[in-house]
Image (tube, rainbow, N blue to C red):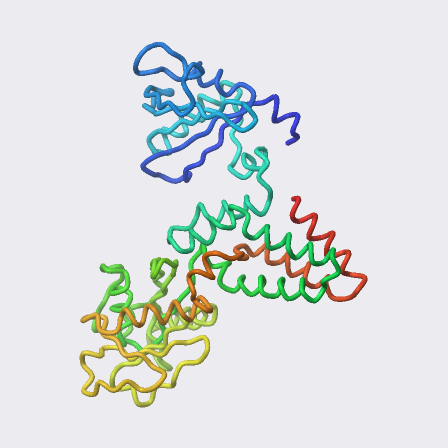
Length: 383
């Protein structure tokens, strides 16, 4: 799609999710946006067309079979765009899109819309991730990247390269690349796997964290046969906690054995593994490592209140130790969990961006490669 073709055509972009929702938001834009909207929009009050509306004025009416709210939105370039807000039913959205298509309006996605409006690649990527996140601290981090925080840091790196400050540029890039470890989890959630023997309390803990019954809890060993993912927001960060089959070496149940195999695979891929032990296992449990967190469950049933060093003791039923447990999880998942530092700085939030920047870092090694690294980074910033 060329700039010339964009200037001569009219488009519609859906800004709300394509799935069912309470409200759908469509933006009509391009050369004849106001004209098309005038032809299709039937005002509820009066005869005044949309083109005669004041910018931002809310107009009630119908767009095809759907009752909507419409408003005219001026752009920096002086063109008028029309926003349609209606019921989020996919059927009604489809009816609006079909009516627009009959009037020679082409549907294009948000990325194409933003690109046509001069938003560059880094910020388009950031918006894409921001639109998927539902945890407040993660959203705040991503919104900073939408507003250019990552770009400004990369521009600093480029300036240092061009100024011959090679070591300084490499140090800054290395610090930035370290944020990818947790930054690339912001929109999809940090994965936490609950591992332990059958009936140790994994499902009860998931229910306690979720605040309501999301998984089956039973005193029968081996109840959980499959992986059960529960999306949570803890201290403002997104987590996907997986309740897995209880781990034991021997079982004659084919389905349980399959569940155990799935559990071990998920455990190996998780960002954090919570190793759960019952009260009778507390003396033999191994202390936590850098990637694991060891937790003694059913604290309310423990005769002794002394918790072995390096472990936590909780009761999912009574709530004992749950707040400390959640805080410890966040500490493990987000290094140096200082909100001011994490929320203010540049973060690599996307795997493709990470891959591109690792290539820039590789090119920084060697005197002849420095100019190539600077050129590569310049092209990335202009993309």
